[in-house]
Image (cartoon, rainbow, N blue to C red):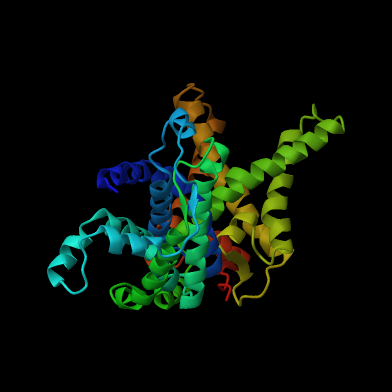
Length: 383
């Protein structure tokens, strides 16, 4: 029995290459769930979850790679499975130089393939037990059970010939692997408390997440704004436009304005009324609009807030850019254009100064919230 350790380098390299793409698919939903639960995002939590996914990918690649040629697999006559437990121990005692009464043979035996291969199967699932104990806070009996299930998944993957891709197994299903993998996961759970002393505990992460989740940060505001105005608002406007077309009103001159204003009312007034103060974007990042005394905001406050922000602020910026372009790009230097430029410019300048003032003073309450008697608050984290 020869063990070529170089064969493990290829799966590790493959995991390193594939990890960023697979991790993005798998870890992002997990991070969103964690954010929804605690109302904030911790870098260390992301590191733990990403590294856990990387470990699982690497372990899986170590089980299935390198992939052999199907024609070569079809010619194999080796056993498909071994159901005799502790066969690895018997092989170690029979085929290594190990003699229990001769200590000089102990170290030499540890360097032989009959020890390295079983030891690898223990080490393979050792991190699994550590993660389950450290982050997922599983007791030892559950860690052993989950370690067994993970090992069974690996072994069945091998027994199925990689889910039927190969005509027969190219690696043997071995009951000893189940025992060793389960042992590795259990040992990982045993040593986890020692390793946990060097890192923030799960409870400490949760407490920090909850505390951080009470703050209405710029990031949460920006994400909610992008979701509401870059996704939800255009979607609602598109549905309304389609409805008008089906009613035969597609050519009406007032259609674009009507669609825009009604969509605004749906997204920023109706939805917060139905969702306890939150637009869909705010719902994602756990924010809500309330009154100054934190009572539910009524329809008039929501309408005034949305009007000041989207009908006054954004339209003043848009009008200023339009007038500026008319005067200096198209040379339409009429008196009315200059009046519009100054008028829109004053409103736009006020909104920008208000933004800068809040940014410096950290009030986080802009003029539209002040005049509407509202404010943004963070929703409490789910327990």
